[in-house]
Image (cartoon, rainbow, N blue to C red; front, side):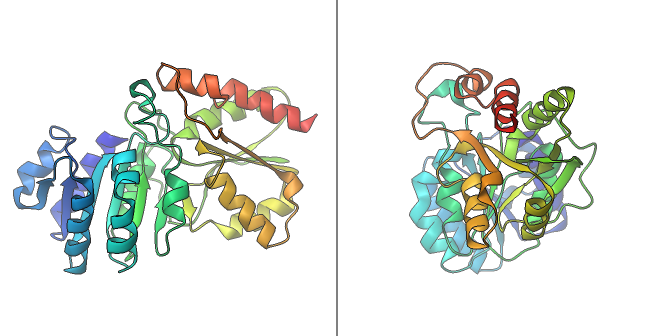
Length: 307
């Protein structure tokens, strides 16, 4: 995902002189092409993420389109006040880009995990929250995000994730979900880098005689209300899946929406990480298995709700 982001940002910087890249002491080689093409529009702000966010807000209010980038907890939790007050309060079009969201940096321990960021960011007024499902969705989200005038949070995985799309999805629109595989009775709503895992979950369920619909819910705020309205009418079971805490994340957003509109919430099952820090040592695949958010574990959990 991060390689696709750097490549797409360089292309967009070639066509839009307002695009400015601010890095929080990371990605020096990753952004070599951007720096070579636009040396006056790249700033390594060092380990000063709060300041980076404030600088970006000032640039945005001066007509630029700044993009801030570093590891997820450091570009979100560490500078939450600046995101809220400098960017969102002023409706400044700052794009906050987080790399390694969820458990992508599982091997580096809880300081580098980020299973609370969606909850933080979606609660702030004026903030758009987008969690692409693969590298092609990253490119599409970056293009769409730089065309809109709100602050935006772009939540990415790390690198090496499987691609789902063959190219940039032509029908990608912020706030509109993408149906990856149509289905019946069950809808698997995935957000972020869980999408390849959710597709595998769908394949397991399909082999068991179910025919789940798999959807990339790349935008958590604003939600695709049209899809949700239709889904609560069509499907017997709706499953939200995320590499994020069950508290405050995508599943919570869908549950809040459903309650406020009088939908049958008995249809809804939420899958995510528990309300605790993951302190075991291991990489992302191991962490997912331990927390029950790998494909086989999720298929078993979902199948149990259908019994």
